[in-house]
Image 1 (tube, helix red, strand yellow):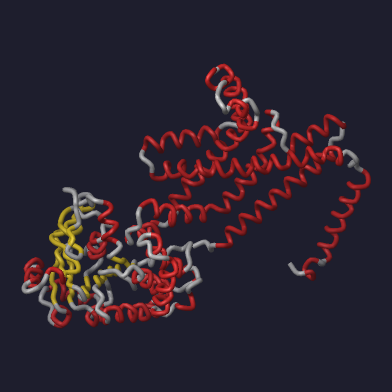
Image 2 (tube, chains in turn cyan, purple; image 1 turned 90 degrees about the horizontal axis):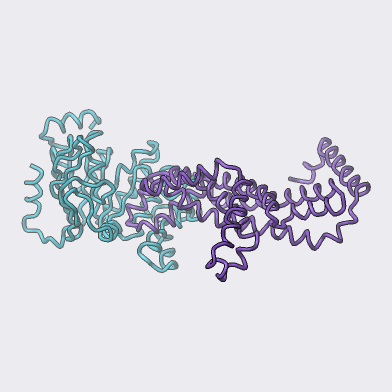
Length: 266
Length: 256
């Protein structure tokens, strides 16, 4: 049913509007098939929340999109550009992957800020050394971004001196610095103490409100319902159910989704 | 340390004892040979220092590929790198110096095109063999250190670089190498001091560094302790400077 829904989505829609499109993605680790054909289309401005139990393949799916994991098969199209893949799913063209990755900024569960650089250096790293933005310009922009996530006064601080929430906000600033066409959030609040979750969600909520295209793997159901335009529920590597948040959360059809929502205390 | 902390009773006693020792050394030992040997000593000191710096830098530059090959290289690079590190670390440095100097050094003159080359004026001196041996030694030890250093860098750090489309060499230069070096800076500081203390071995192949100068004084003047005490002081000062330099690097970036 996942594929049908995606086909429905495309009716009357210009492909230029399409930020990212994944078709029939499979991924196996050895004999274990983690993704069994997942498809997804996000138009510009869409916020797609991917939910599911642990081991459902939701993080793997997100990581396959920018080839941090090599998919086994399927196609991925970013901004209308097909990613060239070999028969085994590995990227055929390293240059192309690098170029596409610069448009897909990722925010990790474990933040992964570069520990040997200050926040400002973290934020300007990719613009200066990958995108070749002039340094002064990158610094100017980085300061604006750090201000925006409430860390303007921490620009010269090293990540290890900050709380998890601050680090994650800095990681979001780092992701914004590349002007991504799609932002990928991989459980951005799962490693945080409960009292720090709110400050990170506030930042992501603002991004959603300004029309950023985002794919968001999350355990925060309330938040997903509030900010997402589309919900995908993954179960054992397949899309079990998907649709607008009010339908998925308000009137779940699949018994598995009903069960899942019950276990997470929805 | 504040002045007040310095003037604790036990510290005062230690300082007085040390002062007495220094005064005793100055009064009752022979130092009249110093003016005569000062120019040679300065020359030797300078030679010790440049040999240390050059071999550490060259050795470390070799250690990076050696460590990288062992950490992530294919077997045909990893295996030779491992063999090299094992051989260097498993044999005495003195032996390595002699093998290079007496081995290569006596082989080269028999090869006409080497004798005829522009490098010959250098190759007939001892210091190139000393520099080569000490460089290889440092590379062998640090290659092993760097292997661990490269493996110890958190995978998430590299994944973040990857996820932003950073090209592989940029990632190596900007993220992986700096973090690897940062993680092992304390070890490298200690190894550099060990390298300093290995330099006297090159005196055995006629390189006149600071230890050789003290030996010269001993054999010329039949004075044993005075040059050795002065020598110890020189090495202590150089080791102190190395420690301070590495501490300065370490403090620039916090660990973790």
